[in-house]
Length: 244
Image (cartoon, rainbow, N blue to C red; front, top):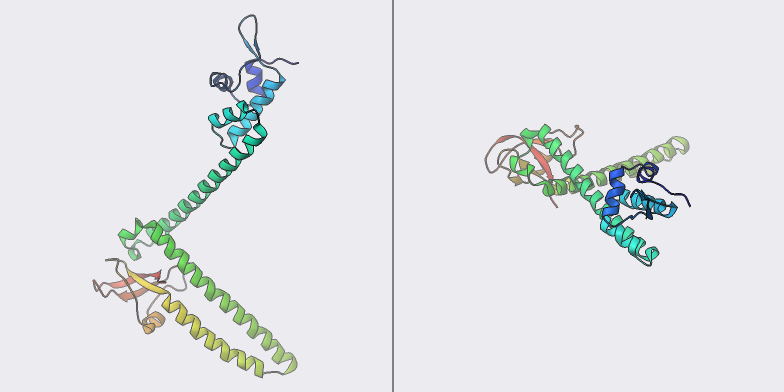
């Protein structure tokens, strides 16, 4: 059986000599024997164990967990359990990082449009994220209804042109207008507006909702609408928020 020095073990697993010595001190990887000069010597089994330690360390297991696996009489049963726990922790961390990325994007968008976002809302990240998600759902419904309606009308228009059947197209146009009214009503009832100065959230009339100057053509999820705040009477841009 081959014998390896500490340096050879370290080189084979792409770690430092100090790491191999540390694993020895922690009780994870003892040398199989010592040379006459007191040097640590390892065999093939030790090399395989070091590679396992490095692999488990790479996926995030703690040294204590790795030590438990190596010391267990049934590593085939212990390892899957620890891996399941580690996978769960990683999923939680991924979700947390995703929430942090969402928060960063929201803050960045808010800072870029600071005149339209009340200062106190910057600290309320959860509320802002919920607002974004609520508006996203509303806008998604509007988009889905619009695409479906347009596809139906296009199909019936082709039917009219090819076969001269204009009545289905005319009926579809009437239904399209009716559905449009329902969608606008749903959108109107799902939104409110927040004052940029005092932070007051308020509803507006349908006429203001439809006709007030706004940024509906921008690529931002939340519209900005020029309104008069009923609380502080400030006149300026107010941000659209989700109002369930």
